[in-house]
Length: 377
Image 1 (cartoon, rainbow, N blue to C red):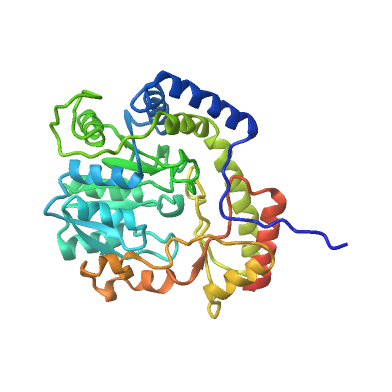
Image 2: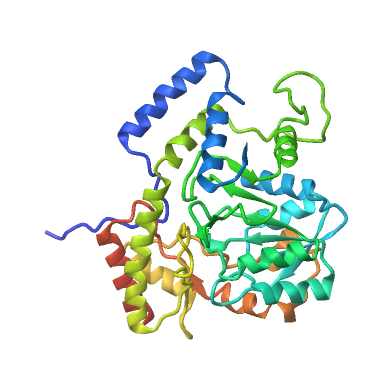
């Protein structure tokens, strides 16, 4: 009788039976209370998340996309050029445009799939940007990001951190989302931790935190309810149910990232043996390992590699990102210089992110690593 091999998938909802029962009980409490938004769970989640990352303030949002847009508004992006990597999710560029800014694409390095200080300096010199939206792609904080922050401060540039991938990522004693002028985290179902849908703004600026709370609640400033609107905000609130789920997930975040790290270490050791390159995070205090980015060797086709993995029951999820923003149809009107995006052009179609989650077992990691060796060697 042939042994059935369990598939390894790129999504895992890290909630055990006891935690699900706990959330169900609290859902009943929330429904009986009648306060479905802006209640005690929202306040508790904000306080605990701020404490976890070391920020003075945290503000829940319905998505990280909304959080990035609010930060762009608060930092005065309207009518100004804002540098942003082309290798990022739609949300980063869309937030700049919706806030009235003009995106200016930055290239990336092959080592980290993100820009570095030199790329930023070249972009500032060439385009005269007023601010920067930096993306911690895959949860990686690049080694010179503290120098990036110093450069932005010394040149009067605002620095927004897209930390959608970076829950639990730390560099030189600082968490993602606390190094620049404000950060935005995502709690989408595929992220390191989830609230179903949701996001969080982090900041040390009290005025920004208060305005962010106003913007998420139709511009009502300090009033949760009522009919007076002071700011041109939107309906960007997180539900009380989602906030409670966030509290449950946050309590186990360190454990979830540790499991991801162990799996990455196992796969990386096998790749080292055959000389296949990947984005290394050993310079960081800790990494979320939201995505383990592997550079495909010359002659290896992404679709074929994915198919070969699927044939042995290993299903790779999306990369970061196969189609960069300057090639996305929705941004066809955003100008770009292909000559300044050569690394992005080269590597976005030539990388793979294996299915590593907080549900990846030791045996799963070994299977993934062994399969990659067979396919990529």
